Image (cartoon, rainbow, N blue to C red; front, side, top):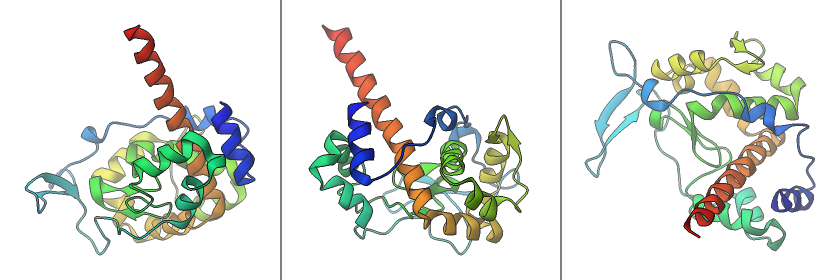
Length: 212
């Protein structure tokens, strides 16, 4: 928790009232949310290295660029970010392999600084809603996205991914791409990334304790 507070203080951010509300939003495993025609609209072909990958078939990229993400670099290169900064630097390949505004069709949908996929979409959107409910409603309120227990319905997300709508539907794509550029959406990503970091650190501590 000390790492979380240090990062939040350094960034000049205010942690959302209760990140547990976002973490409680469930997602469905990617293995259940990908399908080729006729039941879905994703492609499942081998990449240049011969490995089969899931992608979309529309006028959107299926991979990320390799330019430096300035916000990621700012966090990772500052000593005040502590171990979280090193974590971010590692998982983003020095802030060049993953990006806060990243959004492409791998696995049906891949986005954000940790290359989240559709199973994380409900919790990231909830974190954004907690950060800025008014802007969230402006961007997504007219899309008729179903909710369940205060979260985006994971069944809708799963089926939308299967049908390639999360990347290829122009209305959703426009709203989501705009949200990724919002400062509060980037803060929401940090909220979720911090939780991921703390979870990974806790798992490591438990493994070390078990080995003693």
